[in-house]
Amino acid sequence: MKNDKDRPSTETIDEERRKFLKVGSCILGGAAVAAMSYPFVKALGPTAQMQHEAGPVTVDITNLHENEQLTLTWQGKPIWVIRRTQEELTELKKANPDLLDPDSLTDQQPTFAKNAYRSLRPDILVLVGLCTHLGCIPNFFPKEGSVAPHWQGGFLCPCHGSRFDMAGRVFKEMPAPLNLRVPPYHFIDEHTLVIGE
Image (cartoon, rainbow, N blue to C red; front, side):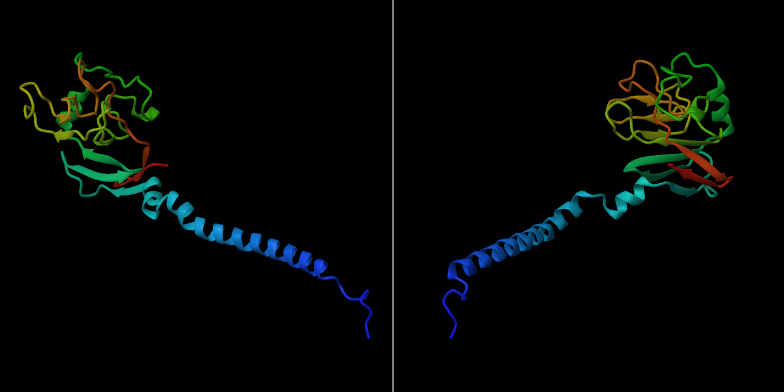
């Protein structure tokens, strides 16, 4: 027969159970919180589409004809790719005192865009299709005289009337304070353009 001294007291057993239950409850509670938080944290991250749009976009311009505008999306913004005519390029080389920043001196585009054409290749124009005033999407009017008697072609913002030439340069006294932005881009070959880095 065992002695009462050899038996563990009920107080000791209860204390050990309490410790076990506390630790077990903490572990299970932590796991439950982590499991319930995962969908919320995942929802805050970028979607697969957003990750795709943030990366570089490759564009085939083989079938882009003169005065045609190709619109695509990069980083959630509309990007325009336009093939200009030789007449438009000749017009862009002429000094125009009506332009606010004709030499693109404002630091808002890649260094390669600080030329009369605001592009790597004179015939291909690549712009972010958002007005620099309030972010409206300007309309493309390539035809001479289609907007005003002395209109040489370009872009007109439907929201507040800002006008831009065929290089995306804003005219003076317009609501838009800056030229249309040029995104970073490069050519892989004569017919393949990559927008973004």
